[in-house]
Image 1: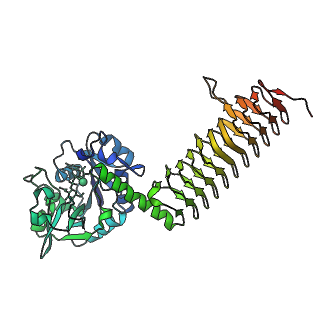
Image 2: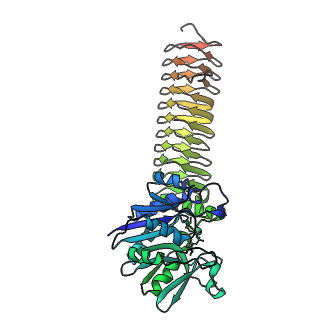
Image 3: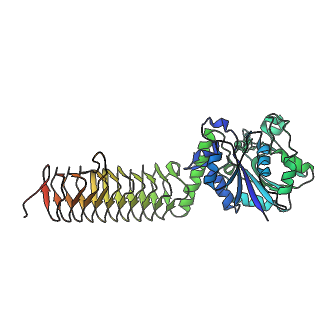
Amino acid sequence: MSLRAIVLAAGKGTRMKSARPKVMHEICGRPMIWYVLRSLRDAGIEEIVLVTNAELDPYAAAFGVKSVIQREQLGTGHAVRVALEAMETRPGGKIVVAYGDMPLVPHATFRELVEALHGASLALVTARMGAASNFGRIVRDERGVRRIVEVKDATPQELALEEMNAGIYAYDEAALRDAIVRLRDDNAQNEFYLTDTIAGLADAGHRVAPIEAHKRDVLGVNDRTELATARAGLNARICDGHMRNGVTILDPLTTYLEPELTIGRDTVIYPNTSISLLSEIGEGCVIGPNARLSAAKIGDDATVRESVIVESEIGDGATVGPFAHLRGHTVLGAEVRVGNFVEIKNSTLAEGAKASHLTYLGDATVGEESNIGAGTITANYDGVNKNRTIIGKNVRIGSNSSLIAPVTIGDGALTGAGAVVTKDVAPGERVVGNPAKPLPKK
Ligand code: UD1
Ligand code: CA
């Protein structure tokens, strides 16, 4: 049996008032269309045709779907017709039609819908959205669902109907192809409504099978207010998933998560924390409050407070913050301590190393158990090149040292407070002053 989907996303999205195609607006770090496609795939629907406009079409390939451009937006029915014309006819095929502006539809809803199609020519999702909704109204008679009336075409009696069209459908392919060419645009918006296929098929004696969904799952995003509502809904769902897996989230409302994160059990996330871009966090960690983690990899039992971690790794038992900034491929080993007002870029700190206060480490390698004194900076940029600073094991860098890269400081060496280190320091050597010079051996 052939099962395919058509996703409509060619609409102008006028109500968003945006230069960006509506379905490319992000929700929890992913374009809203990403969620629709993921749900369809999770429901086992792999062949998807996206109906786009000229602005959206260049993005389609990145989503791994075929696309068809609907040059003129003549309505949802017209969009489906454009897609069908580009799709080979498959006898006995089934086609799901979904709208690209409904990012919260769970894959289970698509599954149920396809199951409901057994013995019917059309299955559709309905929901009770509340009286103010602009969703189409479902009109029934004693035989069941008969037609859908759009709000702009509805009589006051029809507007009062509580059962509404969520905008998700599954069709027997032959029935859809037949109904789609019969659509007319003699309505308030002069559009070819996909929703008129329901009356078309019901009138021709086909069975229409409705299934009901909860309104929070079928929210459509047409403007920025609905975008915010959808974000809150998705974020709550993502937080729920992690909490069910054993993560403590003190305040899901102020914890901003993305899909596809890994967070270990007994990790505690404090408020005002955002975690994005496939970050991985181990077990028993403390994250936040006020932390931003992006593409971060954090081991077990680590602590990150009031800090920003971007594209960096933190080892088991390490402590970062408050007020630290790790970025650009920084790697902290186990039990490393990074404290207040420390910025680290493209550097590696081995197990047990410490930079507790007011430090900049850029393009540096710091060995085990070395201590970087307050106010130390690596002068890694000479105006042309970025140069490395290599610090061995058990090194003591005195407060306010300036390490002028490229420079190597050997194991067990020491720099005095305020040292300006311009030349390599041998293992065990002690240097002081500007420029730093060795002290006599003890
Ligand atoms: C549509 C339904 C309505 C349903 C609601 C649920 C129709 C006629 N109405 O209304 O019954 O309650 O969704 O969310 O279908 N699109 C195209 N080409 C077009 C027009 C639209 O691809 O020519 C796409 C849009 O990009 C959008 C989707 O179809 O992703 C739905 O269009 P939209 O204008 O948002 O329809 P609604 O007014 O929300
Ligand atoms: Ca819509």
